[in-house]
Amino acid sequence: MQYDSFSPFIMDFPFYEAIVHESIAALPERIRKELHNVIVVIENLPPERPDVQGVLLGLYEGVPLTAWGRSFSSGIPDKITLYRASIERVARSPEEIPHLIRETLWHEIGHAFGLDHTQIRKMEERWRKNRLPRTERDGSGSP
Image (cartoon, rainbow, N blue to C red; front, side, top):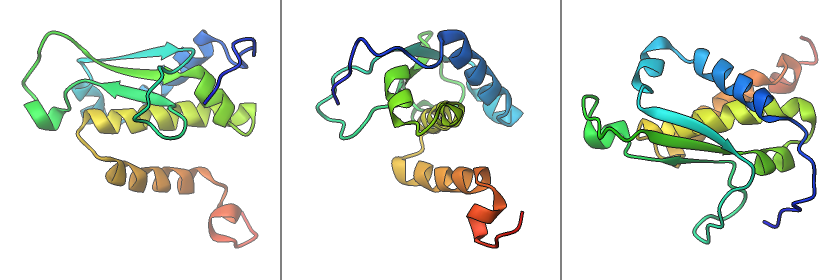
């Protein structure tokens, strides 16, 4: 994907940081405790990755908990990166940006827990279904 470096961002870094903090706070405590060795950073543009098809909204870099176990710590934190340009280009409206930040962060946290894309996609389908108003979820026409 080509990025226009002259496009202004809709949301600033403090906005993204606030959504990241809120998203982590919304996780169950048992999951938050496991994130003690994971940092989250926000960058403007994703790196060029020929191995990635589509738009890269976020990236997990590290060793999943399932690979090393819960007690292992290399001293170097795992890293989740969120990419503002990608998130804002995928969003259909400014109101969708917080949802995309949250879903991207949770997606990458899933990788930190050793989940593969199939498992994460199933969870994302449930999140999106729960995010939609009832009338859109079930077609009932009533809230």
